[in-house]
Structure formats: structure tokens, C-alpha cells
Length: 336
Image 1 (cartoon, helix red, strand yellow):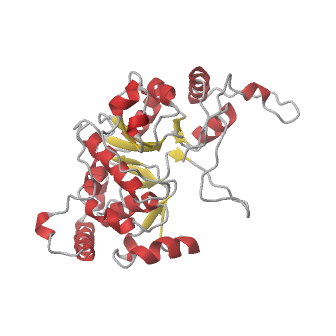
Image 2: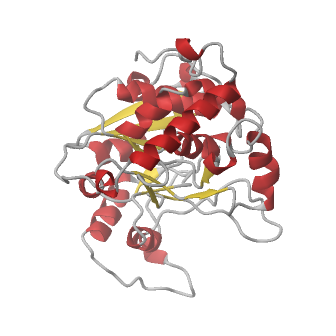
Image 3: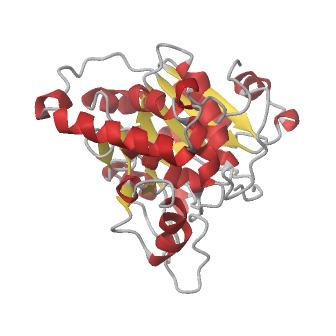
């Protein structure tokens, strides 16, 4: 792999004398001028027959829990994998090693270095000129539809990115304290956005725009869930959001809502037909969080049946979906 070690060091030479805030203000002014000149017609694509190649950009600790599923999903499709591991030296799978960057930013949970890891997998993916879309995932993510269905969907939305986002006017009090108030000292408040979940799908054009401004990564060091904020904010700053972004996450994740629940981590699910039917019906193509190994044949059967629109009623016995349990499921330690 050839991505340059150390995302965040490629600032523009001609802007070298400007402070971070001055650079951000300059980009924002240029974006507003371009938006004022852009006609509605320029926002509409003329074709939906483009060739699609998907880059799965994974940020992991030392293994890809659902490796067999991802390999099955990508088979016979235009899909490639790019991986950043916290501990690449611990990886045992030869296939996974071949997809992993040769260095590590050693990110912790809720660490701005997660952004650096994601950026470097994205840059490696962009080095392949045929890459059209980036999908960010973790080791606890799985695909929940067939790859060809996902690729066909992307063809229907050329030059679009996908994330469920909100801005500073609709965020929570927690967002205000832990995100907006910290970043508004450097970034224009209207540019600040948050995507939830932060594991988003972006098109090549937007990925290249983000890569061109990685000198702002350090500004997110003390922001809560920095990767959830960095990417939509950079897309707003460079003019992609909102006009060229579908406000819809293609990856399903859900957080606890109980008063006493730990809301910092998404819910961990047990894989079964019922939830896959439901999530596919909502328009999702990926989902997290799954920390147990899933039998690949069972996964394949469920995903293909649901994708084909086969609706089956499961026989419940005292409220238990006995037919929905997967065979020989191994327990795993929770992943981040």
C-alpha cells in the first residue's frame, strides 16, 4: 500500500503564511461565491449509467471480524478493500494483511486519530483512478444486501454522497457544548455539521475535496466523536453539503434511548432475518454493530432471500424466534 504516512501534513504552499482560521475562512468565502453562481441545472446529473467501483475503507483494531462475509459479498463485483489497523502486526489473515496500510496512527476510541486513519484509507482508495465511491466501515459492520444491489443504487445517484446529518441549529445541548462551541472559534457556524452514524458513503469528487484540506484534522482533537463531525463539516465547507448530499445513511446503527443507558456506544445486534428485512425496507445496505462471528452461509441465505423480496413468517414459541438463530455462533469480545 502506498498512502503517505501521516494524514494532515499536506497544506497548500501558497497559503502557508495563513493561520488555520484564515485558511478556513478563505475556503468558505470561495464556496459561497461558487454557490451563488451555480444554476439548479448544474446540480442535476445527465446519466445514471456510470461505471461504479466501491472502496470499502475499514478502520479496525487487529482483525476484520466478518472477513468471510465481506469476501463473499465482494466476489464478482467491482469492490476493493483498504484497511487501517491499530495493531497491524497482530493481523493473522494473509488476505487482510494484503489490504492493510503498513503504518498505524494507533487511534483510541473517541480519538481524532480515527480521522487520520479514515483519511489514509480513503487516499489509498483514491490512488486507484477507477474508484468512484468510498464506504467507511469498522470491524463490527456487515453488508445486509447484495453488492450488485448496492452498486445499482449508486448508479441512480451519480455524484452523490450519503449521510444522515444535522447542523448546529438542530443539534442537542451536548452537541453545543462538546462540538459547536469548540469548533466555532475556527469554523463558520453554518459549516458545522454532524453525521450519525459517522460511517458514511461518499463519492469520489467529495472524497478528493476532503483530501485536499486535511490540514484541519488537528482542529478536531478535543471534539466528541470527531469523525462524525469532520467529514460533513469539510463537505459543507467545500460546498458539497447540502446540495450534493442525500440526507440518508446507507449504514444502519442505533443508540440506546433509556435514561440509564450508556449512549456513547451503538446497540449490539444478533443477526436474524427479521431485522435484515426491516433494515433493507428502510433503504439500508450495511449495518452495525455485530460483534459475534456470523455463519457466512446463513448470512448469504438471509440476505439473498430478503433482497429477492421473499417474506417469511417465523414461528414464535413463547416469544422466541427459534428458527431465527444462526448455527454455531462463536462468541467474540466486544469491539470498539
